Image 1 (spheres, rainbow, N blue to C red):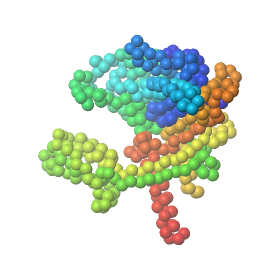
Image 2 (image 1 turned 45 degrees about the vertical axis):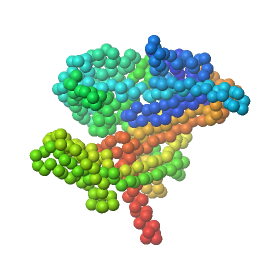
Image 3 (image 1 turned 180 degrees about the horizontal axis):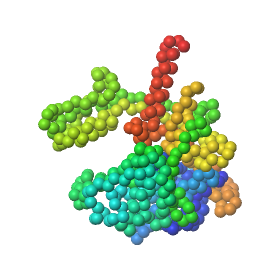
Image 4 (image 1 turned 135 degrees about the vertical axis):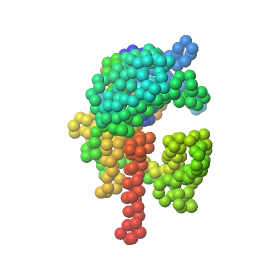
Length: 435
């Protein structure tokens, strides 16, 4: 076993190698905060990871996972749980400590984008700020201003740096227009502006680019990268053994007709039908009423219609079940092994002779024991204590396609599902024709 987990101090210095039962990085995602769960035996050393402040609040614990020296990720435990179970037959007591949280992209998800990050919130104005430039430059400018050189020192993250800007990616434009401080109430006050991760996704929708936070020494290093086109090198298929199955499902729209009453002078009532044949089919026509009498602005009305019809659009879902194989894995490339990372484009051969390309939008990594006990990595030898746990296992499951990643107004999964439906339709017609 070469998956190791180190506990880090607040200064990001390794303080102990952790004996663990199971690490489940449930999803590391492309430009989305991932999540993890770590189950530990309740040893005295592991109890040292659970600390509290003067108010009794759990203090987040930094961790560093090294996955077989081909991939590594710093994690932030934000929740802890203690479980104690007594076997009614033997009286034996089993205790575990469970830490859960996210990767350090959570720091970006917790930061509002200030129009001018080097000034305090009270110095902001409602004047919009538009930034235009290479995708990497726009992202790193705003991350630096809001996390490294912020006007409010409490917003700056210790031991957090932004890698040098290489100007990668196409030219993008991003505009920040928050409300004036003090004017928002109720719901408006809770939506003061986009988060940094929202900004990243908005930029990436204009020019495909990924972000990541790695640990270098005792520094969290934020950087951008350009996903690669590995469609010729990284192939998932049943014949190779790394495509375990696929499922395609379609559902009729829940709203394909938006009926609006608005504040415009005339007409006050308007009907907006979605494109396609569904609205004209009485079996598929689904109407929704939207009261927009509070506005006369054409742009607001158009946005409301778009939102209504988008939320009610027919659902097209493609689920692909894939796995790593010895010559194609998540992580670094070491010939003859081909590695892939989040955002890379790969090929999925769902049917013989028919291939599709899509991005790797996520990955799930699990390692541990299949029975209660500890899985221990010593600081040097890695020898496990005999007889304390079951068989060790590792599972890596890539997620190909993602309904949450927007590109050109349509999600990559929807585009892929659309292709698959065309193939399925052709196959069905051929079967009916006896071919």
